[in-house]
Length: 287
Image (tube, rainbow, N blue to C red; front, side):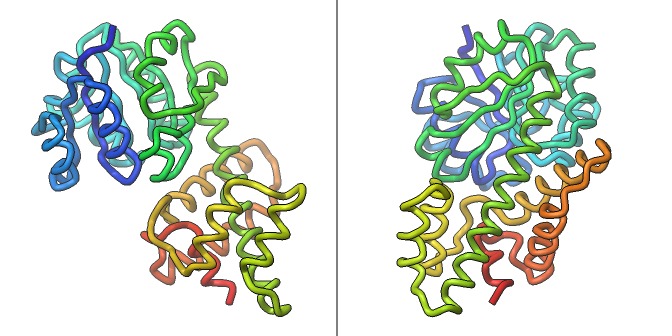
């Protein structure tokens, strides 16, 4: 049974996952390269660790939610890395969104140390994380997943096993692609509709009445109509995920013309300094 958890990565989503685990009464040690992100968690009972090594040491499970570059540095930084701190037999859950190469490297190094590795990239926004409604895509041994389900249930609505280690990363590429393209389609539809004389509320009413209705259109369409682009899912991360998807397609000799066109919109938004805004902010580049 998992009782003590080491948690690394307290960003927009990770911090709220950690908060939900504290509410579920797990003993939680936390680490982030920015100590200020842990302030609220410490008041809720979390213990601060001074390094990736310390946060992993002696834990039943270590959960990591970090961008690829930061995670690999935290994993492999010699005697301070979390791979050095995790005890053989403990569980390492990788919840970041990475390239396939990084995922497989981390899995191989963990396995070589006798660490049980579960690939589990998360899908969802800050609101999903706060409400415990994230989706977790998992790749690896199903028996190991069974041991992790209770922990995941405190922050995830959907826990989907998609295959072996590596398969969850591949599936996340699909998710990243569709999510980015859906937002671009919504943004273009709103801009076109407004140019043709309709208010955003009326456009959304029509879209939500038919076959193209989706939770994303509902939530993001309303926030765009209010002019609210506060970060729920950062534009820079959606762009990075889209780039991973198009790179995977190129390696498979697959041409994705729509994805390539959409990538240019996100790239333009990044160059305009919108990377820290919500990914719905791409609509600003269409006016």
